[in-house]
Image (tube, rainbow, N blue to C red; front, side, top):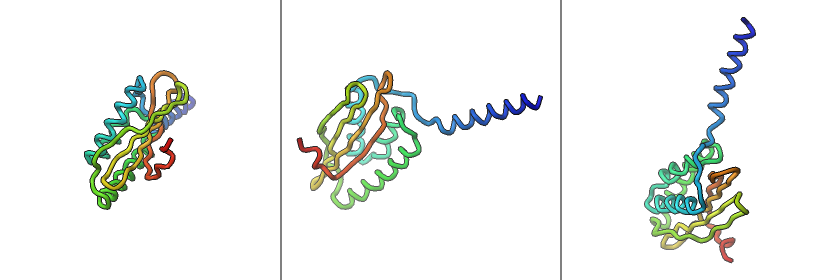
Length: 148
């Protein structure tokens, strides 16, 4: 009886651990066109001042842990509020480039445009089997690497 109780407690603890640590989403994007459309919607929301919502819309496609992603979203929201105070609201966006590594990695870069500045947004996706997962979102004012 004690052995059965120990087994049940172990299984319960394991199930709890899996539910806490397994926060990577199961949804994927099917095609590169879907990746482009998803990232364009992100930029459209960001330009409309809805950055937190833009990040939330990417959550279903995460191939990374949600907690660090959410922390990055909060940092970005705070950063872009300060940017708007200094250079004004965004005026638009444009697609800059798309690159891939075979059928495994896909990266697309967009500019979020302001009257006196621009910020590059980079989205990286990975396809381990079937379907693309978001594994990275970053932004930078360093645009030198975008010149080709």
